Image (cartoon, rainbow, N blue to C red):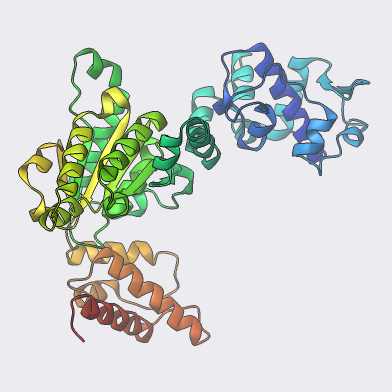
Length: 427
């Protein structure tokens, strides 16, 4: 990388103009070949779709980069390649020399954040950059909130039924989820399910051609606080799929037939949004409600739910269905049969508790022996352990400290024990 000092604004403007040139001459390039910072500027007509030909005009730059003084930048004595015509449109005088000049001043690491320019340089024979690696390292547009919001809007604007369905789900784009599977303490069986899903997605064409469809319907079973919801959400980031979360208790209706309609609408919406994860929490609610169902409304709703599960799968519809239940014993055989995988979540043993404590507190200053603490917290769920440490941090801050000690942890344990007593009906 050249050590000569260059105005960062000149480098930024050069990158934008060079990228526009590459995109205009290579129609195969798409939004995921662009750096995140300039995607919106290049996709002015429809989110995620490059509006070709891309023209870098002064007005566009002012709209998206108001602090970039483009006119002044091209007057820089170190600018040898950028021009601006009478219409305010920027261009380069010679693409290849300009690209090499830019690369010389920013280096491989910076250039690899721009797959489009990486491809151009690699094609020209540069061995220090790799297009495939550049693509792997850049966040996918399909993982963004903008993508999911735009897709939902396009679907719901055209259909009242889909609009009603969207009101019944909580959508999450992968980028919104602040933790990944590596942030969780997963069992080998749980990680094995993740690998199965990834392999199925990578081989969809093969599986479809052999009519192997019964994949991608997973039931998560375990007590509250053991990580079922966290697992489903973290999986979103691993497979690059948004999540539509549904709580069955929220879609039941007292009106005749409305529960069944709600279920149908949600499954239809998932197929429209696909690829996605449809996460149905409180799956045992169907069993609880059916017990007290006097008029058969919930029975019809259950039948609709089971029918919808039968008619959705990962291979044909690109929908990964995940159900979660705290009360597996309440589900009847008909419900169990719909799932091709059952993943168990149990209260963590001492080793897992220690691993969770070490992970959660990895960046927290403390003087705690986590092996001893793990032994003291038998019966705690992962959620309990996180709550305990959160309360310990608050306790330390209230005392004017940013390092937690045993007294802080004891305060956290007391809070968790008190909550668990109340939840169990004791006082």
